[in-house]
Image (tube, rainbow, N blue to C red; front, side, top):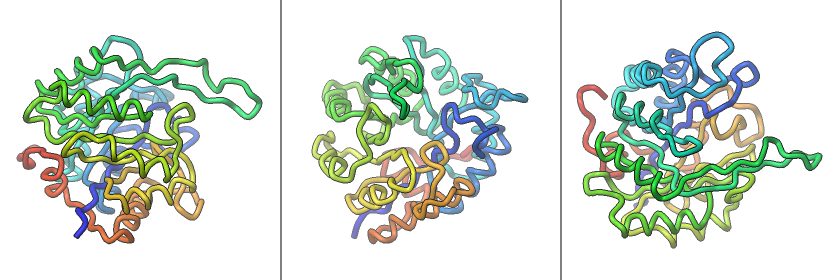
Length: 296
């Protein structure tokens, strides 16, 4: 029988403006959206932090007080849930995400595993934003892994391109993933314009470059076209992720009313592939995490 599918909900994202799109910002909003996703089958909540206060919710935050308020509200609303905290920053200074990891001690934190020219082109041929490098050299990856090891946090390696997938296997072989940090976990990020496309044929090739005993999932960014690829993830044995960070659209092309509806559609992908939806306890076991404690 196929292994259960761990469902992750990416609740809000980095810069989406809540005045234009219905993404949660405040601790109460994040908790309410997480509760809907949790009841629909999500065991893991991928958390981005937003600046609090009128007119500031489109900005990211590394305020550890905000992290504590948001994560505390989600944990209270979803007993036993697994928190996956974002860490992505441009440049060498990781003090913001490091402080937040140390404050809330998430079970999982994203670990961006390689650098990428982060580009997007508009229809008129102009750059959507000035070309930039999302820089994640090995020394920076090691800094994040050191903080995660200190806090008992499991890294989820974010892979935006095929070479980054292959690099993670080298990180594991080099001993960068320490004992006690769980099984290697890779997230194939597909749909960023200058990264891997959201393509089912490419997806089917990627697991051959996983390190031994690895768990994998896919983050698929786009509109209704992502859903056949989600189905392929489920069929290939991967773990599944969606949420308002990744898409606003359900499989039929209609706008999603919130994260709960997106996770319901993701759970349907798992069931069509003959897989059960993993409970939080099952997810912890599959990832090599310790059992839930009294505070989770």
